[in-house]
Every structure is written in structure tokens, then in C-alpha cells.
Length: 294
Image (cartoon, rainbow, N blue to C red; front, top):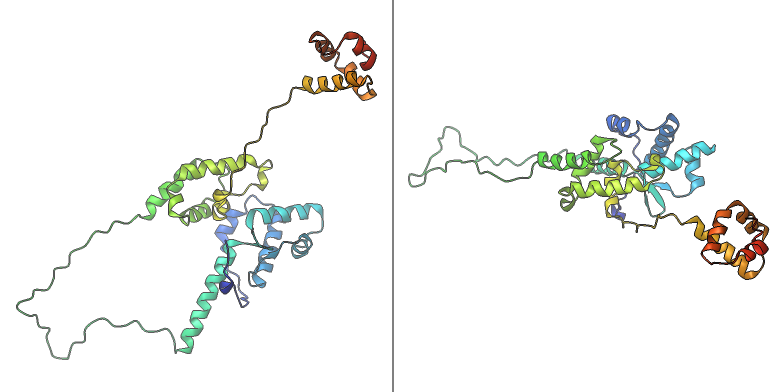
């Protein structure tokens, strides 16, 4: 989420609105230590007008009162899961949205107060003089009101897309927040739940330590589906015989075997015998330079 310069908060608000149901649902997997660190970071960010947590480990350790290695690791976990990096600061998207919303409401209330209160809604009904009856021109009949059907994509159809996404993914945590964030997606992505689910599964499987994987709700809000997909790496395991043969041949060609290579030759005599059968070097060379005892 990127914040324009003219939309940054300019004043401090003392009250912080904590949506308890969402908070409890989104932090059920955290320890008490991690929850305490999370609350400290949120309080600091709110008091600083939601300008963000500086991307300096000494600073955010001090903000969250992290001293031990365990506390520092918990701090990194919270920043990874619940904050996004914008420039030189970490920002909590939900908290910033609420701050901007409240700031706009406060500004509007002040402006209305200066004008004497909220502006009254204009009266669109025609004025009727007392003791007078409305007249209808004989040549014009009043139109008969008929309901006009309108085609609108309702919330139910959006929820159907979300359910397909939710049923296909692992790490089913914070469903309520995930559904809200799904409905905020661009139109082109809302109608592709299967593709989004495949992308999330790919992301989740790529995280070695699953406790640091983003929940679906925050994966959606951070628009991680727009990230460039990493290229597949070759995970094939090299044949250990090929590696040992290379060492043996280098020792034979150099006519000098180190104690390390000789130790390998004695540990894996079957590889030395195989190399001799394949004609990589002679048995005499193996005895002389590899200390082969077969």
C-alpha cells in the first residue's frame, strides 16, 4: 500500500480503535510474547501518527522492548506477518486505513462545526399553498411508476469466488479478514479464485519454516500475487560417485594424493574398483597415488 504525500496523517489521535474480533482471530497462532510485541509496535505506530516503524533493527528492538534472542526473533516474525515495508518504514495497512478514515471524519466534523453544524439536506418536495388542492392538467396523465430491474453483481456472487479460493488453499487462518481482503481485489482477480489459490499454494510451499508464511488474508492485502514468480531451481541430487571419481582422477594425474583423498579411497573402495573397471586409471596407479589396498 502506497501513501501519497498529501494524505499522510498530520495530527495525533489519542484513541486507538482495536477491532477485537479481528485481532483475536488473526493472532490465535501467536504466543503471549509475540502478542505483546505486536501491541507495542501498533501503539508506537499510532502515537507517531501512523508514520511507520523505522527499518532499523536497533530501533524496533527498542520500541518492542526486545532484549533476548527469543524476543528479537519474535519481533522479526511479527514484522514479517503483519507489516509491509514502504521505503524506510514498516507499515500496518489496516491501522493506517483506520487512521486516515478517522482523520477525515474529524476534519469534516470541524468544518461542519465552523458552518454551524451539518448542512441540511435540500427539500425536493414542491411547496403547496394552504387550502389548495393539487391540479392535474387534463391533457397530461401522471406517469405510472414501474420498477426498473437493474443488473448488479451482488455480494453473494463475490462470496462464491472467495469460497472456491478458500477451499483450495492450505493455512486456513483468519477467514473473516481474508474474505474482506478478497472482496477488495481488482475485478480481474476476483473472478480467478483457482489461479489465486494455486499461486498461494506455490508461495506457501516455498516457505521452509511455515510459521513465517503469510496468512491468506495478509497475502491478499499485500498483493503478493503480483510478485514475480521465482524460477525453478534444479533440485536433482548429484551422484556421489561422480564427485569422488573427479577427486581420484585429479590425484592420479597430479601423481600425488593427499591424506584426505587417500582416506576417501579407503572409505569407498568399491568406487575405486569401479573406476579401475571403467578404465579411468590402473590398479597400480590407485595403489601408488590413492593408497588403494583392494
